[in-house]
Length: 178
Image 1: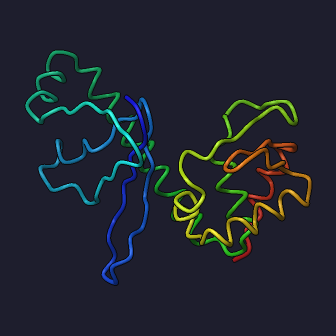
Image 2: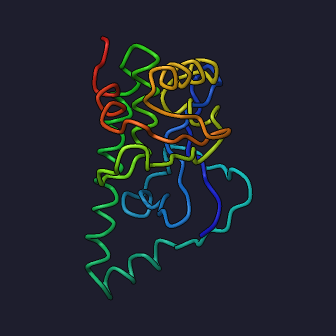
């Protein structure tokens, strides 16, 4: 309902890898309610959070009452799977500017805004956001600086950007260097 939750996995070397950052209105953590296995990651509040909790019994009862709910949850799982594919692709991309463009483009609305009208606000700190794309905070900052110098985005304030050339940002995100 309020705040943000980071989903992450611990690697054998002790480092953590952020997989998702959820915010108000997002549903998460329901996979174990279907497959009876433990959740494959950890959840951590990023600041103050207010969230609802649903038990397995409550979910199954709700689905029996309204089978459309199952379809909605499958749609959520499909979106997450698609996002996981996108994240794998993003992590395989070489070239900081491409990863940063991909990261910022992921925040853009799906509708085509007029040039210069879309404002992007990072949902978490730039350090946390950079981790989602396999970047260090320093490389993320360098990539943003390149996009600013190229006239594609304008830095409004910390963690807030105006997209001056939406199509060019999308194109930069798509031109991978393998």
